[in-house]
Image 1 (cartoon, rainbow, N blue to C red):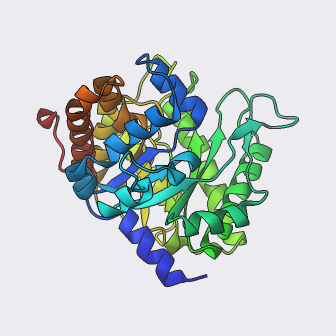
Image 2: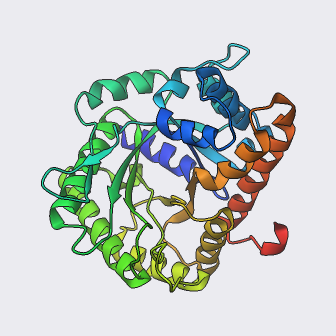
Length: 337
């Protein structure tokens, strides 16, 4: 393991005022997004859409530290023949790759999921490294319901995250570890706090057992929020305070940075929450974003599959990237919107 190389990449991923663009939607997920704007999900359309984002030059240079890609995109060339990995690298951002094979129903545990993808992962990581990937991502899905999550679900998912992380570091790739406690449900914000604390506690226990070098990792967690169906929704300040309280308890100071998932929050809430946490300050780790929908919903709608809308779509992406870049410094305010 080249600890120095891993640490250098991890620090670049959480550079001041920059965050990560999650553009790693699977073929099925991107089809749903394209269906919403009545665009066919062909290989060329997927390429054109993502290339448009990656060529939003100012936003990429100033506010985006890295881009998480799907396998197809990592191998694709831009319309002019330039590999998309090169288009990203030319902006100073780092190319990354989603390597898990998705969350599948967990045997013997109704309502729970376990992420697959460890088989053959060492060889895939070596190939991805050769293709230019500097970091990777693996997502675990943790549902809250009556009696859920079970201890078995937390152990299985965090153990897989730790084995994935160790394999990444062996291949000189920085692992983003993503234990996502899902927002869906009618649970309280206190219950989300409880489950997130348990998940992160188990995660760092497993990472320690597998000998993962924490300074060469990045955490991608959920925020501590109320379940989407709960009639009482925690306010911005409460979410910020409870999330930070949870992290101070659970996340070792050796971790260089935390990049949040947006997890179905509105564009504005994802920005507001991040800003509120950075305004509290006094944090041992960088706190930034790794947003998919919260960065892409606006440009996707503006684009609508039409080349003539490229400038408007790039402007929409640049605006959301800038707003979240400011939030990552605690320098955002609603009148900037």
